Image (cartoon, rainbow, N blue to C red; front, top):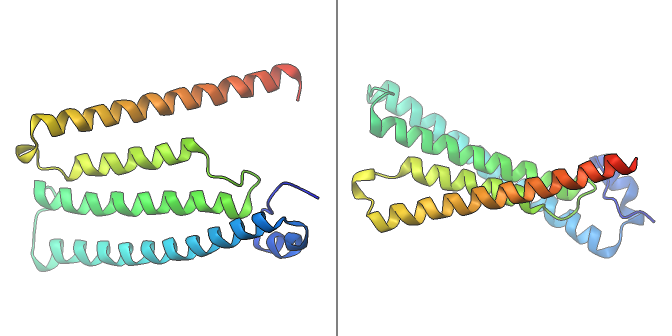
Length: 163
């Protein structure tokens, strides 16, 4: 028996019989989530396309105008977050990692926080809210750095031991 999940759809079918019950469950959940997130991505892409066409052609708005740029870029960031999330789910269904790594979740959180900062109207942000966003950004950045540093040290140990 193998503890690895299959890498491709054909691998999922071929290796289905050797997967544990939990690996089967995890694979099915990941595949359904991929389909759902895929639909969200398509709807977000459609919405982005309509929004850009309306803003630039129908309303004849300047794409460099702050409000227009902020709205369109926020929609693009939403799409990128969904794509990254869907890419992450692929690992659960088709890679040896199985469980989503904390580093990937932190990257998605940083993307979502970046989107939030882009969408904010600075004139409406209180000093407390600004401090909270800065604290969240710092905490996520430090956490990502610590996890990445730990992973790099593990890789260096593996290489040094000849594995």
